[in-house]
Amino acid sequence: MERQSEQVNVPSEHVAVVAMFADREIAETAVEALLAEGFSDDQISLVARGAGTDDSGKFVAGGLMVTVSAKGRERDAERILRDHEARDVTTNRIGATGEVGPKT
Image 1 (tube, rainbow, N blue to C red):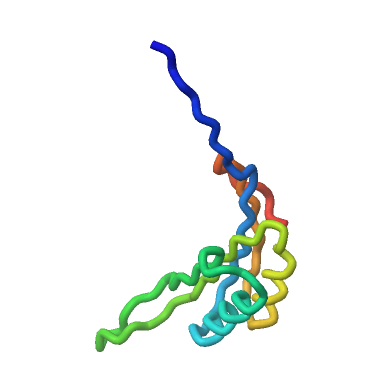
Image 2 (cartoon, rainbow, N blue to C red):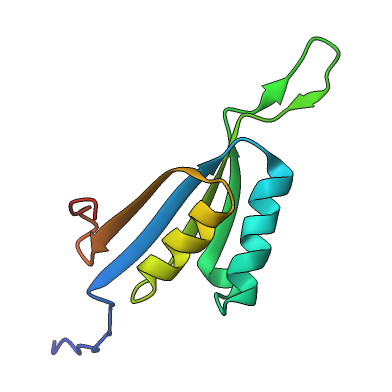
C-alpha cells in the first residue's frame, strides 16, 4: 500500500515575550497598549498564576502573567510591557521541535 504524504508548513521558531504583573488593572492596560500597537488578540494571553481565595472565599490574585507571541516584534512587546510596570520580562525562543532556546 502506497503511503501519501502531505506537506505541512510549521513555523521554525516561535518567540514568546512573558511578563509578570502584580496588579490586574495594570496588566489589562498593558494588554490594551499591545492591541493599540498592532498585536492581535490571538497573540496575547493574560493568565492569573498562584491565585486563590481567602478565608471568606474572596478571590485573591497571585501574579498575573502576560504572554505575547511576538516573532519579529520582540523589542516592541518588551518595551510596551516594561512601560506598563511589568516585572520579570523575558523573551524565549521555541523551535519547531518544542525545545526552548536560550533567553534573549
